[in-house]
Structures are given as structure tokens and as C-alpha cells.
Image (tube, rainbow, N blue to C red; front, side, top):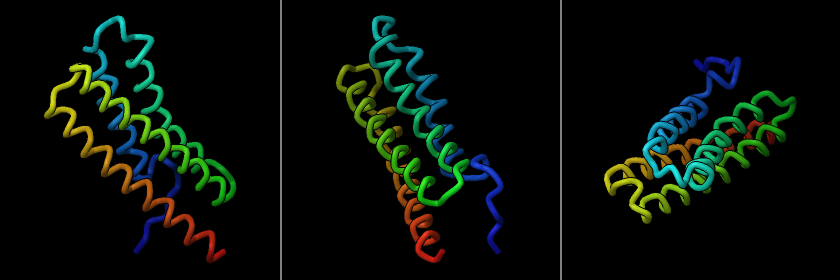
Length: 126
């Protein structure tokens, strides 16, 4: 039996995106202070954008709008991935931390793609 989604807060993909955002905020607190308005700010904004766009899409009226915002979230996740790789290359994070983050990003990306596919099926049935 499927439980209906009442809010974006019910979406596992949104919850995982918020967890990733929290992790990146805590991790980036330790980055050099000269990066505060550079890489630190950029990775935080990109991570927030993933969860925020999922939430905004869920709050829209049409499935098409939801798909559009989830697509933006997917783009923001690609930005997060790029910034994590850069943080590793600059030695702001270690290899193990980078690997764990990349696994989380990969899984979240799969979930986002699955949500888009599900929404596209729903739209085609309407």
C-alpha cells in the first residue's frame, strides 16, 4: 500500500538532501577562513539548492513544474559534486571523507533521477 505524500518533508529524497547539506555545512566549518566567501559559500549554497528545489517543486501546482524544479536540484547536486572534488584536490578534505561524500552524492543522484522518472510516468498517465 502506498502512503500518500502530504508534504515535501515526507519525501525521502528531500530528507537525504537535507542530511547532505547539514554534513557539508559542518565539514566546511573547518575549511580555511579565506574560503568563507569562496568555496565554503559556494558548496553550502549549492547543497541548500538541492533540498530547496525539491521542496519548491513539491509545493507547485503541476507535475510538470515539480519535474522542472527536481531537474534544477539535480543540476545543483552536480555542482556539489564538482565542489567536493575541488575541496579534495585542495586538501580541504581527506580521501576517505571525499569517498563517503561521493557515495552519498551518487545515491542522492539516483534518488533524484528516480523521482523524475516517477513524476514523468505520473504526468503521462494524467
